[in-house]
Structures are given as structure tokens and as C-alpha cells.
Figure 1 (cartoon, one colour):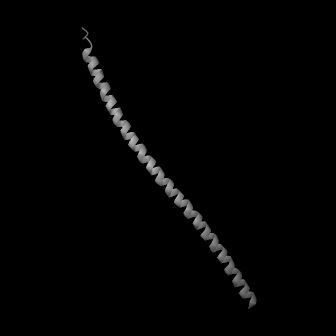
Figure 2 (cartoon, rainbow, N blue to C red):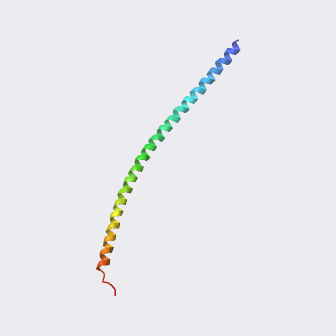
Length: 83
């Protein structure tokens, strides 16, 4: 009877160790997940900033293209016609 009780107690201790190990691993996993979530949030902000910069650059580029087209038109109109 005593051997059975010792065996059961040993099994309980082993299960407690396994449970603690699982709990510790879960805490590590939670910390890693939180770090990933923060990194994703940071990257989201950076992507939004890049999109705004790109939008602004496209507007400036469109304006410069328009200016070039007008200048080319003026040059064309100022050139004497070849006969």
C-alpha cells in the first residue's frame, strides 16, 4: 500500500513539474506574441507614413510633368516653322 502511495505521489510531482514547464512556456509564448504585435503596430505606422510620402511625391511629380509639358509647348510655339 505504501509503495502505491509513493508511486502516486511521485506521479503527482511529475505532473506538477510538467504543468509548471507548460505554464512557463506559455508565458514565454505570450511575451513573444506581445512583442510581435508591437512590431506589427510599428510597421503599420511606418507603412502609412511611406504611403503618405509616396502620395505627396506623386503629386509633385504630376506637377513637374505638367510644367515640362507646358514648357515644351511654349518652346514649340516659339520655334520658327521650317519651310
